[in-house]
Image (cartoon, rainbow over all chains, first blue to last red; front, side, top):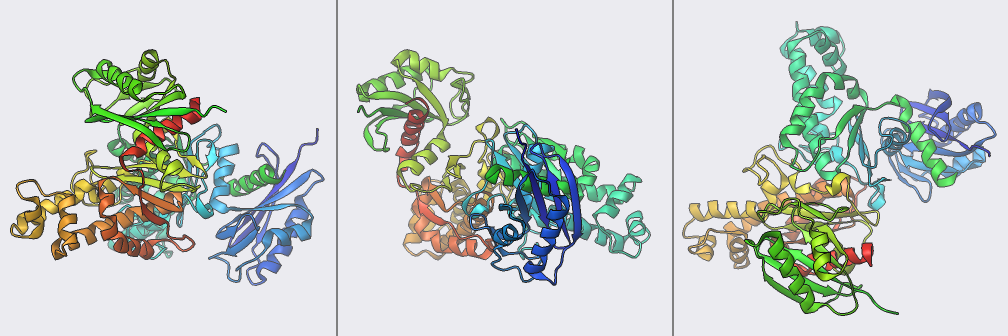
Length: 313
Length: 313
């Protein structure tokens, strides 16, 4: 029996990446280039064609593309991508099919990453799981009752922009009190910059050097035992825990899988996160396992490829 | 063709109610008694048998019971009911089947009400909708992608106990900042009591008379144009709106159906609620319709009956 393969594409504002993926989610080959930002949709379509040709085999049946913005899945049209100017109402699936001769399916990039971790990574075997990518912002993909949660317009799961606090620095969405505004890598970075200013001779400031202090500088200083950095991570863990409790109450996952840059600091915060969860979780709920994502940067490509295979394969 | 009917039971801490329901959700007959609190599970099982016998016909195929507490759906066992002492590990479905000879299915009471409104009330025809019962607390039942959201242990949808604020009066769960703590009928009642104390000659205090001021006194005073009562309702609307925005971001419903006592004041608050939603909703989201529940106290019985029919009928 012929085993159909699929190509997953991660369309990022900086990098354009493609992977050849088998039905188990194993990456057989991958390539990447810098995204042709000035060439717009036409330029990127040519780039996708080149990447696909470099890795395709006769067994490739589909292409799945993860989109970091709004799209119409049924029409295969990109409605808009904040990080890429000029991407308004682009019939990307048709353009790619015309170039490559392969059926093409669009998926939200965070949902694609969730599908990747669900089918081939840290969410494998779960009927109920929440995937969170915590870095600049907080994105998510939700699996409940064995299915991806979509909702009207496919917009369900914007837990990063639920109100969790009265006061905060302004969120990327312009409002106050979103979970993303208090718990993202950007939020930790802001605290790091405040700390570096208050303690210019401190370890966080020295880790940062001439750069603006960021979350990973806090991590580096904390690993060397710096008390100020450890304090920032404790505060961060409390906010992460508060959001994880919300996620449990809202979606009742068995497991919460954490990806994105901040997942690299998860080991430093996990005890405080778990304590924050135990403190607030309603009776009857079992604390979800909190685990780091396993596929790293491949999650989105693997998930987009597997999603395309399940729709078109 | 024989048309199967179902009996829905609403097991409340004060009242025990049963209704004969057809497959469209129409109530053909209903009866109620005061819940036999002292008789415990044995006494209530006898009461259920009596109610069922009073309304059953030859066409009744199933019984569905809405449970205001924790239960194991597969085993048909009630694990515990906060409002009814002595209800620990009760094999209620088996007890009722033994008495009545009918298959019996347990369902969460808020989920049952959501099913009732979804199949036969204000949520009819929606693939994505959120049902909220806002009274003493805030309960919910969620429909996404055409299915009831359940999650691990059937516990998904506890949006009343998600953290939405830094400061609040203590919630019924013992914590600070839950949506229920700032937006439930109880929360509005607390504000009413503060107002009645601060303005003992005011209209809210006079509506309340010798009773503790409550949400419906605020409603009554507001309907007579009282500025202080209207101000409390404006504040309440802002908190309701904040929670509705969270619900949209989390579950992407087309419609939010509001039941419970506070739904009787929805007309007084709807403009402020909609303004609060418009102010915070992410780009790409369409504001959900906000409508009052239609089945009133029957929603739970209708939903429990229809759920039983879908499982056992």
